[in-house]
Image (cartoon, rainbow, N blue to C red):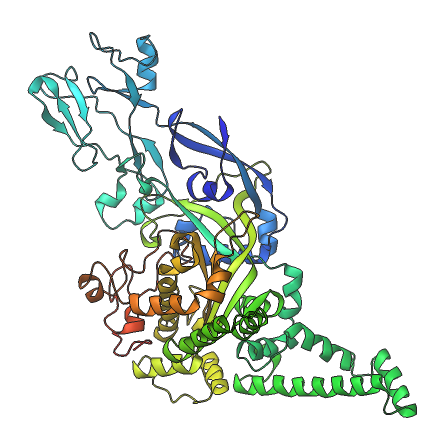
Length: 623
């Protein structure tokens, strides 16, 4: 059987292996998806987010089912990226319970009984049969129908056996009606002989667990966002000569798009150092007419190119590198520059100018005041609205029982025709808000909390260079050498916590918090908050918020971010929980590296799954 659902709805609720409730067919399991192969996807970006996701599982046996991924070529060879259309499913579980006598039967038993379809085969009962609402699942990804007790009680056997469904797994029991409802047994949890069980430390982790069919733990999809720039647009930014320019653009030392500067550098001389043909003609013209407009323009371009070459050399020195090749530039740094250079972004000065042109002087003053408030009070040096942020989400696999990588195995989706593993993706362009933190304030915050103990230059340019040299973990990926060091984790936690607090108060835009996503750019101290809409229509709520309600939004975040409904327990335990910072959907790190203490001061989680390698925070970023 098949049905159609919204593309995003499929990615979160109807992926292969998921169990759901259907209005007509009852409980069902997804057996596969019909999809259209997606061509407009940046495969390099998908390869990186897939590798990042799999790095969360530290043992080979946890990811063995996946082909090896190195780059976009691996994606093309081993995977197929598709946009889901229709869902194929079957009724599941195929176990039934009588709604009158509460006895439980397998489908095979019912077929052998030759009883009227849908009615209980027990003599003198004939009650209505409904699907049994429990299944068994294991951390390895295995899913089975619930075990049916075949022994019954010691006195009456199975004659009076029934299942007492109390609505809760912990209190549901097998009972004997002839013994006055006496308890016979707990729901059985079968052992699972899998790789996870081989490495499990506790006996209970080797057994399948009993779940209600509708329990979210039965199926945990891993859906991760990626920025879907055209790869051709990014290609020139990966050239060695672009690396210092990318840093200069990120550090606000370059006020022109990197692609324009590269073009000027390329046109000034040819690759072998000879004068390019066009420039040679201009030189000849200069001999005849030194003041010709074309000659003046050429001279200005030459001077600008020499200046940019000098800037590039200065960046290399600041970064402590002797050559272009020594500069390390991550994909996210490239994406950051592409965002600044090639998207339709609106800065505060541009928005203020636009408002004044409409005759709204009060509105222009409001947004300028909001930007001043953001800089002086919140430590935000840049705020922008983005009209065409190219975002995508990709379902890469699933776990069962838990999403915690330490306690699960991640499973790919079943291979499709041709032997390739499917990745289900949806892409769009959407509205967004971009913000970047003040590097001087970030470094001062690190030093005041003794997370770092180095004298940092007081100027912005020197501070950016120090961050690049001293905290390489900001541009590294999970599992790399410096990624988990205290200073890198502290900066990411600060940026991530601030993002979640802003999203918590995003109602000023007309959006619900859960309908927005976030994309963190730690190496640029930046973040993008985007509308998670994958339709052709754009609401414009974020752009309206930026122009008309920016001050109210920032103040609400600053004043309300400190609160949690579970305080003081939450604050004492690390200041991050479902009552304040945790998000149910659209968090790329699944609520990792979060703490309100980074902003307001206080303890951070020091143990358990959410443990952070720094803290406590004596001085919050927001005081």
